[in-house]
Amino acid sequence: MLDRLKRHPFAVEAHFRRSLVVAHAWRRQALEPLLPAGLVLDTYGEHGFSAIALVQTERLRPAGLPTRLGRDFFLTGYRIFVRVAGKPSLRGLYILRSDADRRSMVVLGNLFTHYRYRLAEIVAQERDGSLAIRVRTPASDADLELVADLSGKPAPLPRGSPFADVDAARRYAGPLPYTFTRDEATSSILSVRATRQAWDPRAIGVDVREATFLRSPLFSGADPVLANAFYVEHVDYRWERGELLPGRARSTRRPRT
Image (cartoon, rainbow, N blue to C red; front, top):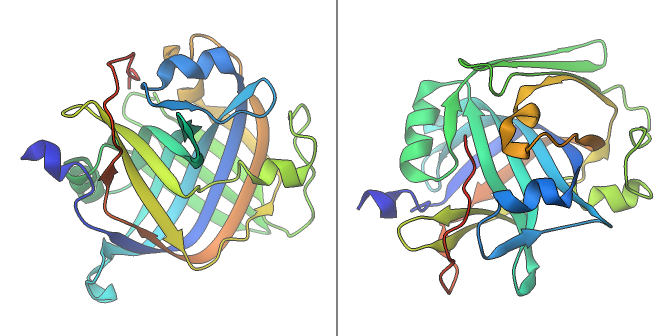
């Protein structure tokens, strides 16, 4: 019964006050061992990509409930850009870790999803055209500090980004139509489809001053490169009920989070 509860048994709705997605490029060998069978890296050239997603949600609630019953949270997460093996049109994000600023979200999120929520102290301050976000975790294993430029100036790609141009980078700006996790009870891939009213992210400059999770042994000492950063505001968002994809996947290395 508990296994079934963790499969996103109902749709969820929220309003995104803001969403910032910061992508890093990796040697594909650093990311491939982290994926369960049934998922493959969504690559650009020889690179695979991870995303740090930082989302300030408002009125998050099970779909169908009145908005007044929703709750506000700040969520952060670490994902890998992937496709379903043999089904390249099924493109999305594989969940490595999630953090939330409220214990209720951690408890309920881990009851109804496989998103691996942890409690964190998250502070976001917007001032003079910039957004500073600071995340502190109990074991300092996913501490994060960054400053994003929201002044509206056109932002070039970060130096060293593997992308040829901003249009190519936009494909890795998230969120994507699906998120994926591995359902241990069935050895299958669990898919959750997301829908939104509009999504027109703009490229922004970002200074990532600390990201301890990206330095964890999980990535075997590989050194990531900042690839892009995109920002969007005021979007209504919905996650549909989870769906187990046909077929079973063999056991493989799991993220040590």
